[in-house]
Structures are given as C-alpha cells and as structure tokens.
Length: 278
Image (tube, rainbow, N blue to C red):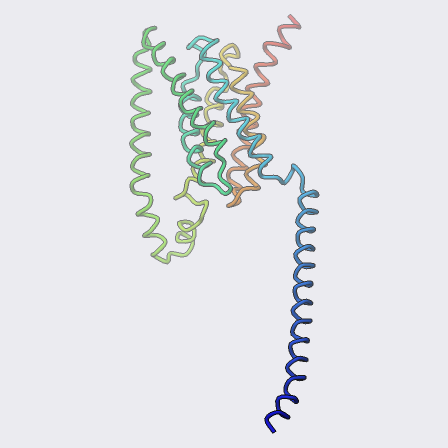
C-alpha cells in the first residue's frame, strides 16, 4: 500500500516541480525583458534630454563662470589700481561667495567645483577689499572707511545672531502647528536654509549694480562684469534643474544677468564704440 502511494505521489511531485521550474524561468525572462526595456527607455530619455536638461552641463558652466569671478578679481588686483574697486560690489561678493560655498556642498548633487571656485572668490575679493581700504586711508578718506567699518560690523553681528537663533526658531515654528508659518519653516528651500539665502544674496549683487548705476565707465571692470553676466545667464537655467527646485535662484539670476549686462554694455559702448566715433 505504501509503495503504491509513493508511485502515485511521484508523478504529481515531478509535475509540480516541472511547472514551478517553467514558471520560474518565465518570470526571470520577463524580469530581464523588463529591465532591458527600462534601461532602453532611460538611454533614450538621456539622448533626448541632451545638454539643455543636463544638470551636470549647467553646473560646469556655472562653475566656469564662478572661476571667472575669482579670475577677474585676481586679474584686476595685478593690472589695475585700487581706485577702481567698488567697495559696494566687493563686499557683496564676499557675502555671496561665502553663502554659495556652503550651498554648493549641500545641494543635490553636490557641486564641489562650484564650492572651490566660490571659496577662492572669497579670498580674492577680500584682497580687493583690503587694497581699497588701504588706498582710502592713504588718500585721506578715513571718514568713509570708518562708516564702512561700522556698517560691516553691524551686518556681521546681525548675521551671527541669525545663525545662532535660526535653528531654535525653526524648531519651535515646526512644532507649533501654525499653518502657513509652519509650512514655511519646514520648507526645504525656505528662509531657515542656505537654499534660500544663497540666491537671496544675489539680489545684493543686483542692488550693488544699481547703487553704482551712474559709476563712471572708466571705473568699470570688463573682466568682473563679464563674469557676473555669464554667472547670471548660466545659473538661471541651473536653478531649475537642481533638487530642491529653486525658482528664487532662477529669478535672482535673471536680475543679475540684466543688471550686470547693463554695466558691461555701458563699458563696451564707452570704450569701443563711442571712442571710435570720436
């Protein structure tokens, strides 16, 4: 009887194993086809997207423009006198590059080339600021230097206070359930993050350009404003591709492009168009 049962069970067991094996092979084949199909779609999408939607492409252009700012400051320090330095623009560029050094490290994907060029720009602009202050002290403009020092001290104190108090205020707002205020505090690119303040600092560059709106063209640096114009152009696109998406960064770069291109156009017109007519 037991022998008969074993004989009856064996075909059923073999059939089950055979069906299971066929099903397993079918699933594997289906899985491979699915993976191949997805891979093909990704490759097709990458080809279709090209440079216009490549975050890496625009990041590299942005980094190149950033190095242009550093390079222009170094070039001007070696080839032009300190009387041509705009203290408004130089101070703003120190703040701007300090914030973007931090931003470039924590954005996704991290942009270390951009961080390096902004760190370099901080030191290059500080050197320009030193040259300008020394020149003003040597030429009897001590009162102007003292006013600048007072504004810089107040600004530094306010910035330090925000850095210390900001995280605590954000935590309390996020826990308070205050609707829109809580949402703003929790926002990845909100006012309690460098994602907000790095692009906001570019408004200061545009502001400095407007403060120097009637600056004599002989005091305008072509290398500096060429770099600023390119930075505004490239980062207008880059800002719409990074994570988190940053419309504020896009808007401020459009303003930077416009204000810098205005001064660059004034300089080119004065030096290369009007001079030829005369």
